[in-house]
Structures are given as C-alpha cells and as structure tokens.
Length: 347
Image 1 (tube, rainbow, N blue to C red):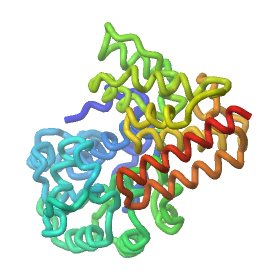
Image 2: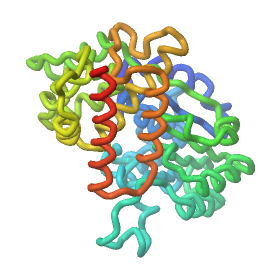
Image 3: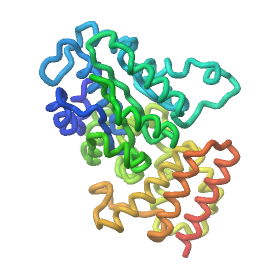
Image 4: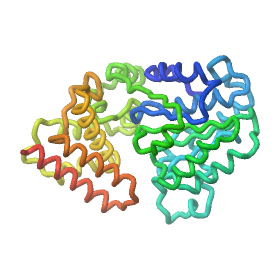
C-alpha cells in the first residue's frame, strides 16, 4: 500500500478530499503539475472508496476489497490509460487498465500503441459500470491522464457523468485540465494538488539519495516534478537534462546551431523535450498575465522572446502532441521549434 506521508506536498490535498469522502460527487477531477504523485493520491482515494472497513479517512488495508486491489484484481476498479503510457503507471493501475486492451486491434504487434483514450474504451467502461458490484457496492473508474480523451470519448464520458449509476465514482487525473471539455469539468468537483516548493523536493531527494547532489530549480522551472526527477536519477540521465536546462536559460543563444540544440533535446526524448518547452511557454504566459512566478523561488528565465511567441509555441506543441506522428515528423517539428528559439534569442 502506498504511504502518502512519503509525499508530504500532497498532505493538504489528501486532507481536503478524505475529510468528505462519504459525500463526494460521482465526478472527481484531480489536477496539478506533472510528476507530483496525482496518480498515487487517486489510487489512495480509490482504496478508501472501495474498502469494506475504512478507519475514518483511511482504508484498512486488510479486508478482502483492499487485498483484491493490492493484488490488482479488484472487479470494481476500472482504469483507462493510453496504451503508450501503460508502463509508466503504478502496478495496481497498470494491471487494472490491461483489461481494456484485450482486443484483436490492441493485440496486434504491428500497431503502434495509441496516444489517446478512444471512444471504444469509454463505451466498454460504461458497460462495466452498469454491472452489479462484486464487493462493497461501490465502483470506481480512474481515467489518467484524462486530457488524452479525444472528442468522441469525451462525449461518451459526458453521458456517464450526466447519468451516473448508483455508488459510482469517476476519477479524472490530469496536468492539463484545459484540454477537457468545459461540460466535463463542470460536472466534477476539482481537487488541485499544489506543486512542492524546490526546498521540499530537495529534502525528499536527499532522503532517497543522500550522496547525490542535484539542483532542483531548473527542473522546477521546466515543470518536472519530484517523481520524474527520481526516474531521471534512476536512469542516469541527470547530466543530459542539466546541460539542456543550462542552454535554455542562457541570456542569449547567439551562434547556437538550432540543429545541435534539437539534438540535445532529442537526447532526453523528443516528446519529453517538447513538453518541457510547452511548459516553459505556458509559464511565461501565466507570469505575463498575473505577474506571479509559476515556480516560486525559481527566478524563471524564458526560452521565448514575447507573449505572442509563447502562445504560438504552446498551441503548436499541444496540437502536435495530440496527433499521431512518426519519428521523422517529430524530429522535424522539434527542429522547427529549436530554430524559432535560437532566432528569437539572437535578436
């Protein structure tokens, strides 16, 4: 069982939702920056909702329902995850999501894993939720990241939210709630998980890696949360990220070859690099609109020259990441963005 005390920055959000778990709406939208543990919080809430003998605001961990969930075989827990992100999920989420991939189409070895949650998956979910509960009477569906629903699957989900079955909870988890239809957001209670301040992340990493020193500020500037930093350290990729952050935060990029910058971005993964650049664009938009730094204590430098450039880059990357593309298209698009950055920073 996950101990949320390990993620101290989630304590306030957990206290808020667990204090009223018996009267929650059937639609729950959990939001917050990437890599801060929103999925773990959603899983803990699922445990509480499905537990047969809850202890006030905590699941008992011992009843049959808790054991079924821990062993990833609970009949009343339904998970929708994009195929291309299934391996990055905690085990109970990953195993419960697999039942929605058991089709001839999904099993084809020649087919690329889908980046979206399609309408067929939501329809199958709808059929599952009308069936009688196998345990406590409650049924829980977890959709993560919910912003990967396409327009058809959002429409199908909206019907579920408008006409929910009894004792059914639909938990949506996303770092990009603006991608969800307003009609879906309006039918959910929203739980915002604040990002931890850099000092809190540093303390958390110190406990896990007492002999490793890492400057967390550049990661925070680029929207990379503590769980993602942990994965980067485990993968030995710290130097790749730090070299890229240093270049993106330079006052100018005069003489920098955009193709070399694109290569540095590619080294950490094209989609990862694009999401970092999109986050920096969004951070500048927010800061220009509110005058408040997106990452407190980070002294944010921008990779983009102005508001218009930030908005254009944010929208273009968002649209690109939603569409099915090949490796060649991804590389060319990344090179276009890097060329724009280098040209603007030279002027």
